Image (tube, rainbow, N blue to C red; front, top):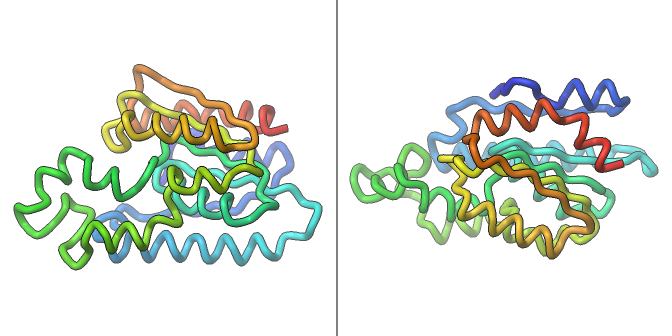
Length: 205
């Protein structure tokens, strides 16, 4: 997926080496693909991180779905010093089951919206995704400086969830800064914050 103003170029202009992942829309159509994609991205990023020479600074960033592997990587490795979360999930399972279209269809046609199928219960999916959950992993981010971007009118990742993430990060992260838009939704909010990516690096130092 591509969004306007991706921070890739701002990072490169600032002298960073960037590893960038994209995913196709069909990733989120079924739970099996959803989980497999997250695990594959995390495994690849983990292997690359372990090959980065010591002394090199490491910052990870995630937009939307990308917030999940980014959070797991930052929470799992002490050498990650910065985490940027742009319109992220708070907790993926809570979001999927509380998002209006998915909640209404959970018992109608064998699907939880277009995301999940009946081979996954809420409990089994939570077990598979808990290590990716920004809300659940906030306790493991005490070594990380975190930048969070939130859109109040986000129809995908509801504000009542992301404000819980905001509060958890404020308490647990090494340093924390949050930017909130009261007028924008998911895609426009993400794009706006992408265009401000140079300021992310300034704050992270």
